[in-house]
Image 1 (cartoon, rainbow, N blue to C red):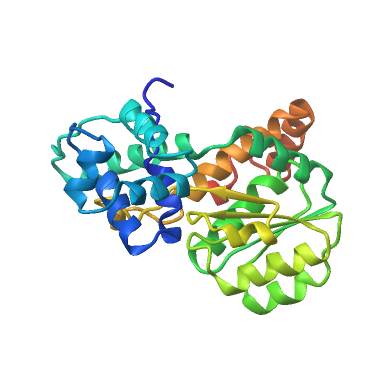
Image 2: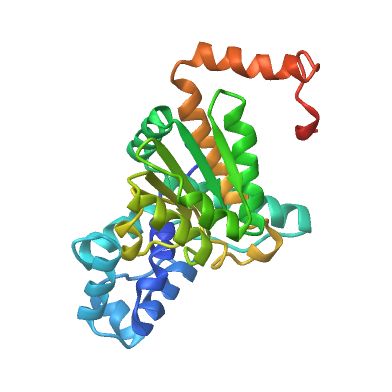
Length: 279
């Protein structure tokens, strides 16, 4: 695990939409900075033309007790970077590595254990998403149904509204929306919550309002602040998190789930090989 670096940048990014204009100016500085310098409140406030009180409020919105604690963590994880990427291959691979490092910093293992418990108890699981997030929901269905989960993927807006009516305390509703703003997905989760289903949202945006109807908000890295985010599939961070989630789930009753997995391979008449959908 030594290849992954502890960093608070993903935390800043996931809270970005909660900041004021001035706090976004502070956030942009810490996200983009690549140079080791004097990070004291006095020095940074003078450089950014903001008050020390603004730095303190910014740090608290990131989940720290104050600027001193924030900057201690920032300096602990700071790595001076030199942009030396050449060639498209290296550019893409370096960007993937940055996303993996951000995922490492966002993963909440206690949360994953809770989600595993929700899924183990659920009689029915429904995953939903629109557009490319819908494709991720379908991938989730294919992964988990092969280890015995009764799971459905919904990618149509009208079906989300209708299916939400049939959820109850024995259901698990999973929404996928990187922006955290997809109206259909949020409606589905809100209705599911009303009917006492467990609700989980995978998103790149951390908003206090989501806690009103989501039992768990699973944060994934944002592509917005990456230098080369436009060349990466927006669903890559979600798929990585789902792989981690899947590994937690199959670890429980591992033998039984391996038997189920092998049985699906035999049913597809491809013994010892992956089915065509993964070719």
